[in-house]
Image (cartoon, rainbow, N blue to C red; front, top):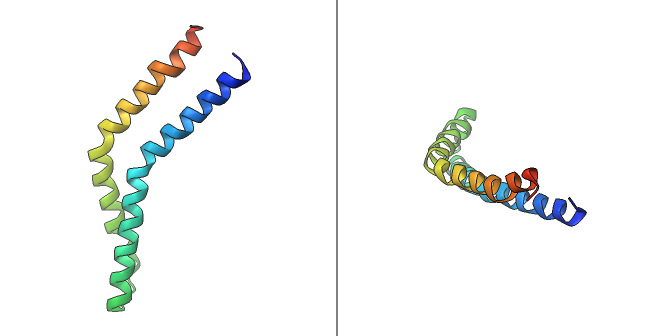
Length: 88
């Protein structure tokens, strides 16, 4: 395996990790901004108000996007990693 193959595989793996984590991070960002605005407008400073809805929204998005994450990872491993391990 050459250096360029290693770097290309690493680049693909990093891009896959960005694609997989993007929905969860986007929902966490949006939920945090909405809850922060709600807290600023109502002067409610409850710590659980920021944590519980954000985690709930992230769990829902994770459940919905789990098939996308799984198929993306399986495709990456079957197309890129396993052929390199097998030496093809």
